[in-house]
Length: 516
Image (cartoon, rainbow, N blue to C red; front, side, top):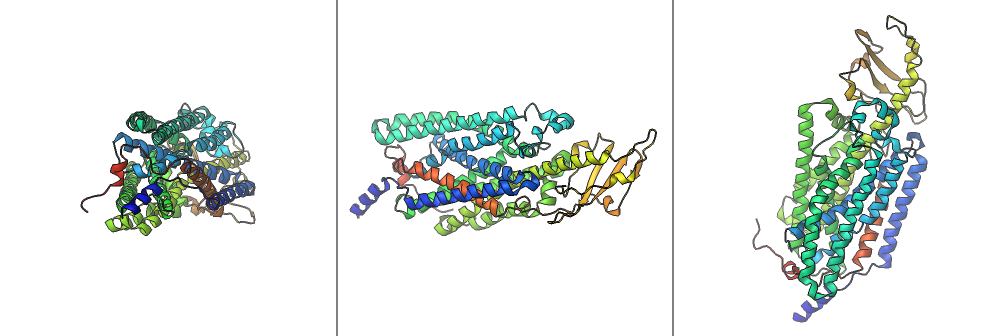
């Protein structure tokens, strides 16, 4: 019995070998992602590459956020003098080393936005020159939302990466020198304590720039918490799945069902917390009923209903009903399934944070161009509001938008409101029609009965916009492959179980004395 225990301990401290088979698997995933991005870029000319840029933004932010959350996980437990996570801390340590790669990915995006490359102008309304001249809210927010401040988010990621590298270096030094057992832990504690407040403010700044500003007219004081909790619970799921994979290879012999139970409680608890933030944000905006704020949920509810409901079902209903039982949190297979399920659920959460806002920007811009073209056909006469009604006929434009929501900021101060009620579109590029309602002072022109029905929009479904398609899934797999390749590469560079961590023995014998 003693010999077996000694053998397990030796094996548990051995290095993980990133096998050629696993490397090939991750490389295949990366190739799938590259091909998916290429196909998206060259196949989305109809909508001026917004599908490509949104996919790139979505996955870059998502996986960079997971890496940041891994560093945050280590820092919070270190500052709290936590020890239960010590035997598997090499996993979040390896995951946080994806931050330099996230820095490269987000730098590509930041440069593209700064240079206003084709298609990026739809990502953020604040980067559009016309909006900067005519849109009151964009002008008002331009001191904060601008390409220069967006570029500063790269410095934020660089700062996170420096903290990650410092903490990992100090952790690895403990392995090679037992005299640094306590000294280096105190240093790690110091760096973690410095990192946490910086992380709190800088992560909010970054997520406001990257994601919330997609819907430039909208803002929420809860958004930074909401978006961060989403990647936090995702990071916990990745930590558990990687541990489980390594456990099947014979590593982490001291990882028990109690460790599993604690990670399961994290997944369950933060799924509930995510729901609390989602509901708080939704309820307050719904109750206030301010057009500037309700625009965010109205757009998603009207045009993106499947995503809207799936987001709640996948990230709250199913995790809550499944993991509310203690036995489910300890069941290896159940927790593996739920971890994969929750990861995809929060990937979908970030999808619905980004895609609808960019689609709105695109349709808003297309409608503005179309409206400008139409106004040239109006024959305005001095002293009255007579119009040449032929000017209301919209020409056949291949890329004309399907539905446009009224710009809410203009409800109170504009004397001219154009509400595009419906557009019909077909895959063959047939002529699209629109019903337009004009209000000019006391004069009211009604062209069709349908125009009286507010918010009735004939929305054409676009795969990759209104719902993730195969190219979106392929892109996600590519980023996943890169994330796993980096994580496993760093796992290979150190013993999986830290040798001289002062909390190692406590973590090995971690257990609970009773069940609630």
